[in-house]
Amino acid sequence: NTLGQGMKTVGINPDVLKQENFVAATFQVWAPKPPGKMGLRILEVAPDHGRYINYIRPDSSSWYFNESFYLARDFERDGLGDALRAQCEVCRAFPNLLTWQGATQRFPVPKSSIHVAV
Image (cartoon, rainbow, N blue to C red; front, side):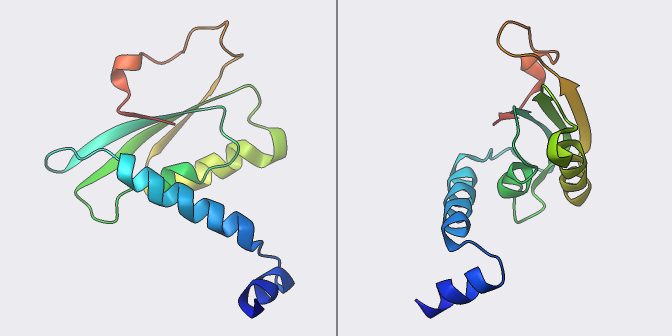
């Protein structure tokens, strides 16, 4: 279609856009529904990019993420650490970038302190 061709011309892949819209819609269904205005903590294991926190974040100000934990082997790869920090800044969440070597190592975050995990 013409719209899809135009998007490709400016460097936007329509298939990726459809996938990200699906992910965002799915996350909104799974998002927590805490009572009142409440700050929550999110944990993302092995992130590829910094966009998931933005997908889950509510449209209203009924709740918000005040802290974000990321577990990865290498935050310097492809500017991952910078992307995660930038998304946290947009969402006004404090970023915690923690090096984690995989399933053989325990999580460096108490699981009981996390409200949402991706």
